[in-house]
Image (cartoon, rainbow, N blue to C red):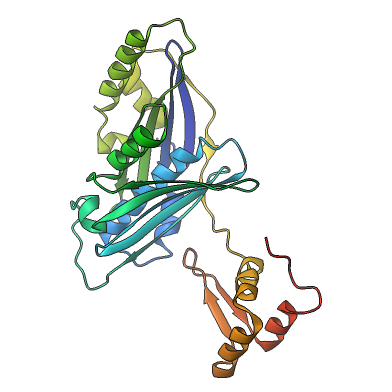
Amino acid sequence: MPSSDQLQRFIFEHSDIRGEILTLEKSYQGVLENGDYPQAIQQLIGQFLAAAALLSATLKFDGVITLQAQGTGPLSLIMADCTRHHNLRAIAKFSAEQSYDSEAPLTELIGKGTLTLTVDPSKGERYQGIVPLESPSLEKCLESYFAQSEQLPTRIWLSADATSEVPKAAGLLLQALPSQLKSTPEENQQLWEHTTQLADTITTDEQLSLGHEQQLYRLFHQDELRLFEPNPVQFFCSCSEDRFSKALISMGRDELNDILEEQALISINCEFCRQQYRFDPDDIEKLFGETPPTLH
């Protein structure tokens, strides 16, 4: 059975290579239920969710990792974020007048644009890396990012199927670690090439239908692996009344009063989960009371 909504780390016992393997079902479905997306964009959302979840395994502190692509094409923006505790969410903005081909490359959907990876810790400074969107797939764009921004060779395999009764997405990540074993650089390179060539044989059907142990055995049964306990992954939106209250305060009382003169309520809808937040004149007055919420 598939290892649904789980992220698992594994290592190769006799080489400096680590990995992450992931399967999404309900978490992916939860995202799709909050947006009316064409099938091609649903597929891409699955890949972005899988990629963000895989990359969240690299977080060593509380925070959020965000993967975002935007450009001049009919799909103007798509983004997914994942916390260290593997809470996932995603959105996409697109032209409703356009038809979308599920086989279209990422560069055609996004057009001329960029891929941005943001690490936002709960404490400390935000880090952001940006690369141009020049590859046809998200996997290759991410590998280009790691090649340019990181010192560790990294390969990623992503799959998604939004057409099944329960949408499914999956991912596999391999990363070469700094050398700790008594191997020469040449030997390490040979091991890396051997391992990634094996991983290149994984199919979309296998990623979406096989459990994690089955996939890893199918790929690396001749190697000694250690598979760690899985971490659950879930759809969860971090929106809150407090967060939107702070956003309203930043607009200023005068601007909010102007809005209230035209309409009785200020209504805000969360783009990620469709939760609606309403603020009437009394609520706005409370925001600017003697002890307004502290801005961070």
